Length: 398
Image (cartoon, rainbow, N blue to C red; front, side, top):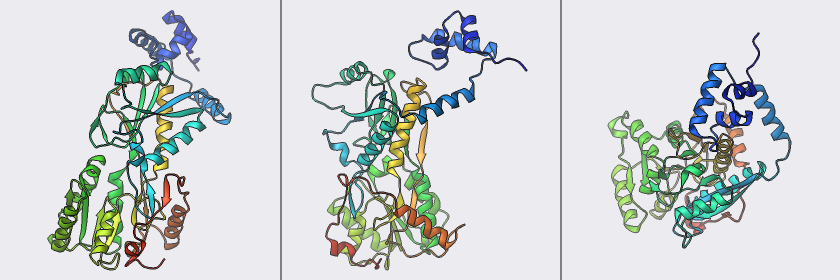
């Protein structure tokens, strides 16, 4: 059995120190590109391979010891106002708050567990341009950035990216294209369509708004159109689409609803529920309603729970890994880590006719486990009902 080639042997052949070899193989920014390429070629020629067991042991020892303070990570926001990011991704009653705030809380919790602090930086601070912000971050030895969801879909932003490891949350940043952690919206829509079919709904309509449609890479619309094109003509309904929510949009929704008479509606905004109730349409007796993203499994509306806390924690894990691997700048091939959402029963659809691959007990246990998930801090996720009598009209008893 041949002996394993070590870093010191590679260093001897390359005529550099073994720490230089280690850094070169990891792509450390302090090692010139020419040196990195030369060391990699020599390592490959000698047959050097990292010791996977040793790497696992080091990772294990790091986990069992409570980490000391390592460094600071930056939560970078780009909204017109300093606190605007806290309102991004409004969630549905009976809670109020924003998904971005949940992302950050979870990210900060995970960062602290790994020995990091998380500090917020506002890109539009007065007298602060991208070059100066980059210099401030670099001077403070902050080399890991979490980009908060942008104020608008398809946004652009600028910093001296070569200095930093960067992970974006969600899909609203169009350029530059970084590694991203977000939700699997395609899977969410497939789940919704399957759940509605399992409840006997046939004429299913989709109500979309421009910003949300763009933020999810048009995945909701793509699945809906693909699934409905194979239906009989009597069951096909063109989706309702609008740029924003206004009184005139409500009237247009009225006309769409009267013309196509859906027996279930998928929406990205909970206000559709109020529109239906205001028109004397009972939910779910007259029409079923599903939200593409619910506030929490205990929420009134049926739909998908996106696990925003999991997204925030995964973003930090991915970022810390990139820092350790010295991956900086705009990636040549960006990757996406997507968290799958969970169906939550709610009170706005009729009961399922069957449970695919699961017994009724298994199904009930899963729903109960989701309802038992902790609610985020009350400072950002408070119980709230706009006009309770109006909201609860037509809802079945719990």
